[in-house]
Each structure stands twice: as C-alpha cells, then as structure tokens.
Length: 372
Image (cartoon, rainbow, N blue to C red; front, side, top):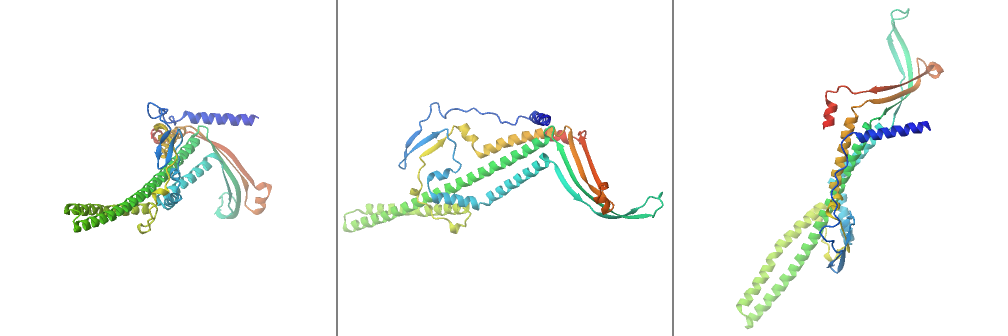
C-alpha cells in the first residue's frame, strides 16, 4: 500500500512539474459561428444532373471524397496514382523512420537499461617490486555481469522530450495526409478535365461534320439557283470557323492526358482512355462546415497545430534539463582468476549506487536552448 502511495505521489509530482515548464502548448481558440451567413442556409439545393442534392450541415468532410462520384474507374485511377507516386513513397518512409526514432527514444528514456557482459582475459602484467616474485605476472581473469541503470525523470525532461518528438511524428503524419489529398485532387481534376475536353472534341467534330454537310447542301442549292452566292460563302465560312477550333481542342486534350499520365506514374504513351462523363454521378449529400471548423479539419492546419505543441514541449524539456537528475545503477556477476574461483561463492561480485547531477556551467548552452 505504501509503495502504491509513493508511486502515485511521484507520478503526480512529475506531471505537475511537466505542466509547469514551457509555454502554453494549446493554440488559441478561434470564434466558431453557427453558419456562414446572417441567416441559416437551406439544406436543399436545386437538382443537378437529375439528382436533388442536400447539404449535410455540420458534417465532417470525407477524406476520400472522390468515392462519392460512384465511379470504380475513377477510384482505381486515384489508387494507382497514390501507389505510384515517388513523393508519397518518400514521405511514408520518412514518417516510418520518425516513428522508429520515437520508439527508440521512448525505450531509452522510459525503461531501464539492462546489459549482460562476459569478458575472459589472459594478461601479463608487471609485478610489485616489494614482493618476492618475478618481475612480470601471467594470469587469467574471468568476469560475467548483469548491469542495470535507470535515470529518474523527476522534472519531466525526458517526458517532455518524448512528447515533443511524438508531436513531430504527428506533424509529419498530417503532412503526408495533406500530400495524399493534394495528389488525389490533381488526379481527379485532370481526369474530369480530360473527359470534358474529350466531350468537347467529339461535339466539335460533329458540328464540323454537320457544317460541312450544310455547306455542301447550300452549294448544291446555289448550283440550281435556289440559294445565293452569299449564303453559300457564309455556310462555308461557318464550317471553316468550326473546323479551326478542333486543332486547339485536340492539343489541349493531349496536354491534359499527358499531365494525367504523369500524375498516375505512367509514361504519356500509356495515358488512360478518358472516362465518360455520364459515368460520374453527382453526390446526393454534400458535407458543409462553417469556415473555422472546415479550416481546422485541413491536414496542413492540423500539422501547424502539432508544431505549436511539440515546440512548447521542447521548450519545457529545455527548462527541465536545468534541474538535477538522479541515476540509479546496479550490477551483479561473478569473477575470478581461475574457473574454480569464478564458479565458487567467493567469485560473487556486485555493486549498487546512485548519482546526482546538477548542471552548473555549460557555456550558456542550456540558456540558449531555452531561448531557442
């Protein structure tokens, strides 16, 4: 019971000490209006593409929002681009490395260090001149020990350093999420643009065909005298003007498909066939949040908030490192100059101790770290 009381008291002291060091780690609270405009907006929207859309007021944005279009082909293109992106792969590796570094730091600071050592040696050393023996001695030594040490984190320096590193890992995770969403948005934009421009090209080609047919019909009418020369020339001019738009549209379609292929990790000659626009369905429900809540759900804003927290923890760890630290150490093993002594009770060796360290002068490094 007394041990539990001591452990609880020590934990309370450590946590209270951690809270006392460093600036406030919570970002300032922003005003949260209930809705965008003076009056609440109606959740019902006009029908679009045969779908009556509704606004889900206060709902959180959907991370994989492109799935709301209901197109498996579009989903497959986005997944392909996310998997083939070298930038995302590098960011994922960096995040994984940061997580492993956090595990290593927590393992070194939160748990005791235990090592096992065994050192058999054969030595030749100088003898003492006052003893009637040879000038040199030849002997064997055998030693095997289990050593343990643990530094008590009374003022929370290690705790704050671990929490600061965890905040950096969280920031990198948010940055990775922001990069994923940005890449997915670019892929979807390029895919929809490629489909829309392809539809424009097809529609323009039909208009060119119809215009040429109309020009030929009017030219035939002019030959038999039922149409004037001006009508014939005007029809030919309209057909030529419509045909002149085609090269620019085709070049624009090729450029968009080229960009889409690069975003997907393909070469331009393997650009996907543009999707049919009618394969994309307008979402029936659109989540809507007020501006402050919407901004707070963005990964880059969350990353900035994590940066505020971990820098505050770093400041607290810098202050806590200026206070004393206590390290407990112990070792137990066996030793001797021969195997018989090593295995007998006389070969038992051990030590136990504690060390108290109070920083006094480090050339101003501790104060500079605190100000940093």
